[in-house]
Length: 107
Image: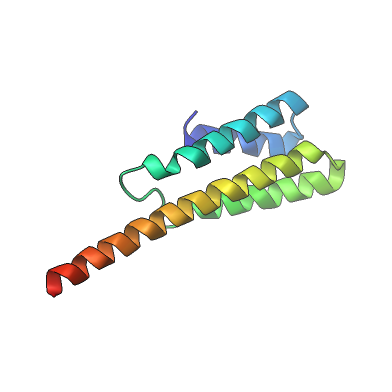
């Protein structure tokens, strides 16, 4: 599952509550993507669009969780947090390395 498909599936779960097996599977898939972020050779979200989408989905999950108290929605929310942090850290690391390389060229 790619990031677009994952976010679409999470959006559906946030809107409908999703069944427990589906929420668990989405949380596992989210963690798997978070683990693979470091493999990307370039920036994943240079404009911050994915991180904005993740934040919006987290808000939707919080609202649904407040209505249902389903702990799996909280798990899915937390896995999205991990994914967002992994993407941000990866892109920041690439930006830092690029800046250091540019500084080396000047010196």
